[in-house]
Image (cartoon, rainbow, N blue to C red; front, side, top):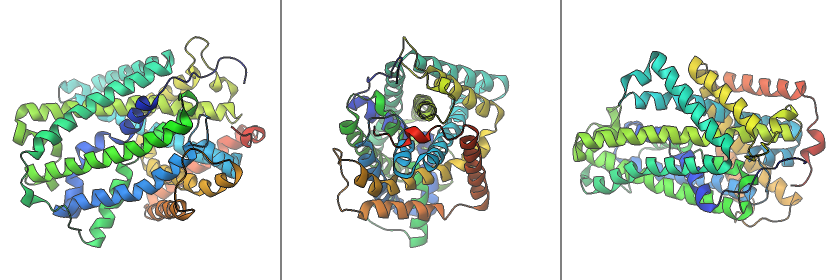
Length: 430
């Protein structure tokens, strides 16, 4: 490929931050109440089971990531394993999940900011907050992958600090009689809670997309995402224990972490956790503006979108056209509220690209030399992870299934509109 190229500027620490940032989102600030309502005092076990199940999928992403140094993540894995059409559809669903999340989280950021500035959560104030936040993140990501990644790093630290304070000080105030560490809830409750939590552990795959901008992708990717899922699993379990151990009526509280913090830290604690939610949503939004455009860039470079989308800025060495396209779409979805339909797609999209990545592992093992990380146990883990993803996919409701079907049809139409130009590059080794 002639012309400016992407620059390898992201190291292991930055990659871990991107993966952790993708997982720890606004959901953790309300999730403890939902899980407690389902699984009761035994809810820590649901977190542990979900983490173990999700580790199977993460292991497959780790192996796939160790095989490539090309931008695109799940899109690249599926394209190399299954060809250009299925690769594009998997990448399309991955892109929609990032777009939907960016639009939804931008609105969540405005809502949390409304705690400190009420005008931010409604009317023209909301539109202004959405516009300024998305425009600022776009500017930082056009200026360079370093500035984009550094923004993610700073916001990840900013969101993690309040949660760490919550856990460390909260553990000193918990009532151990309010939870059971080793007790399992009824099977039906365990399944329901684990299904919810599997989605809560998603987002680590953001790290897999930036392969061409990583200093040592084949080494760092497996380490980063495995470390991220272990870290977040421990954090989530400790947060649940503190919330359960300090807040009576947790299951019915709409702001569980802020309410729990208020009990052992006073009003300052509630404000601290709400500020953490502000940084958390902005951090997630920042990560999505970093990752989402790279999928469009990968499409265009493979000839599956107009070539202009694959342009790299001659000075900043970023896919600036793809960044601008992504943020404009995200802004329109966020401001108009049309992202609601996309949110219904995002759950299905996640399962589709997760299942496709797990299914790709046996094929990629035959076609490529071994990477630096290989999932032990032969085909057991990839098959188990695929079965898990398909099992979860079978639980979607009719509205979600219809939305997913429409999304796939739109992806197929786009593939046909732009022809089969990607066929020539689909099977070129990276």
